[in-house]
Image (cartoon, rainbow, N blue to C red; front, side, top):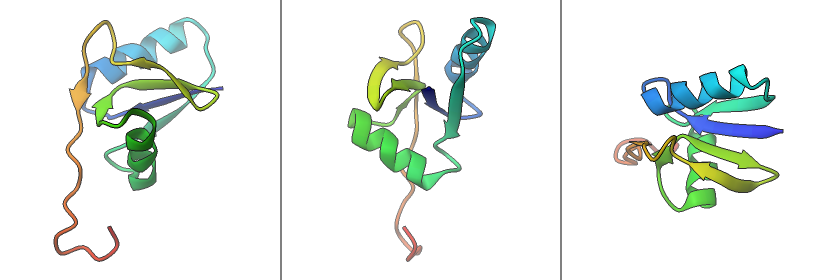
Length: 83
């Protein structure tokens, strides 16, 4: 199954999501701004924080959408012991 890493505010994530839905693809979506573990997986997979990212069988098959993407800011660990 496909995995889509993105954010609610990224228009390219929205466009890729809509394309996947239109094509009838099954996928699981992770919002990396709200899910810290998903952000860590995204960084491990790509070495960066650009979204959207499409993953199949733990292999990145697409970064961005039509040559465009959004950069996610890594959360600061200052003042938050859980990070």
